[in-house]
Amino acid sequence: MTNPEFTQPEETEQSQATDNVSDAQEASAGAIAAETEVSPDEKFQAELTELKDKYIRLAAEFDNFRKRTLKEKTELVKTASEDVIKAILPILDDIDRAQAIFAASEDGKVEKEGIELIFNKLAKTISSKGLKPMEAKGQVFNPDLHESITQFPAPSEDLKGKVIDEVEKGYYLGDKVIRFAKVVVGA
Image (cartoon, rainbow, N blue to C red; front, side, top):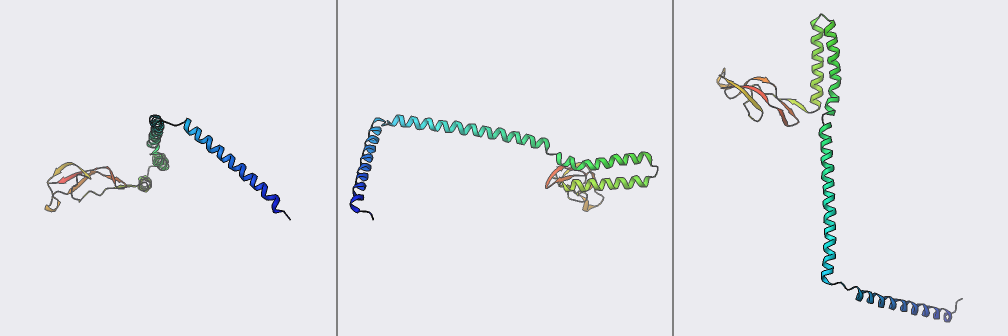
């Protein structure tokens, strides 16, 4: 068993020592504060210097971001068509094989079938990349979609202002027109 008389003096001594240390710390903190009192001008200058430093760092960070983004964009433009070209390469191989068969064959039926197969494969490949042909013949002339090459008298009254012939097919890539249809318009 512990005797309360013996533990009490130790606790009292410790609390007095702690109080003395706290008083000494408060006194030294007050002395330091008195020695380092900062005038409003010095405080303002320190804050201004800090803000200038932050501004310079932020400007440098933004400049690095801009340069990195420009570099990534340039690389993307250079390699944007890579996917499409890789998709078309097998079709080029088919065309090479077809040319070899054309040179050796005398029958036109085989060549016709080969050309149809290659065209269908090409049309399927480019449509999978988002390319869609534009239907222009019989449509009302729209300068946002069509490029009028010439005008001819319309064979019937209902074809006036409409596309009566398509010289060159137009195409969409997604929803964007990438080639306008060259058309003949009925007048």
